[in-house]
Length: 210
Ligand code: FES
Ligand code: FES
Image (tube, rainbow, N blue to C red):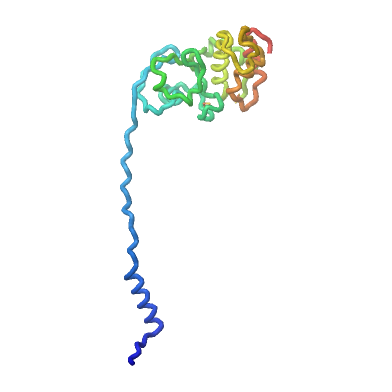
């Protein structure tokens, strides 16, 4: 009987060739061509900012904060967290304060927007601005525009008998007590810790004692 003689090296070569012949060719995924970016959806919106109409065509994802700062160049309103957690971006829209970083500009067609630039001027400060200066209600000043816009709206809320979490009796006219002021201003964070002076400033404008 003939015996097939094969060296070890030859055996290995043969095995490799056999294995590769029988192997399923790897699936080579054809790389999908990257999709062309879709152009942003835009809309035209008119806002009445500090008494002046402003018509802008914006990417519909633009926040009110970015519309004010980047498109109208009203940089008094500050971007702190950009997540609704610090209050630095507070502005007054139709008489109520909002975090402008959490609100899309296109949601406010026709609205009246008041920013810190619309409250007073360096020569004619709003009473709340003057009180903040008198009471040293700031250090770095980054939170201050939001604090002042919020404080102005807080006094309106109290005048309009809108209750807060600490209002004891809904049937009684709310007073701008330090407790009420602290509670209502709790969404405005001050990293410098000027809180006690801020409360004193607001209480002075409200006519109460802090
Ligand atoms: Fe809007 Fe902080 S920047 S809440
Ligand atoms: Fe600096 Fe408030 S004054 S964060």
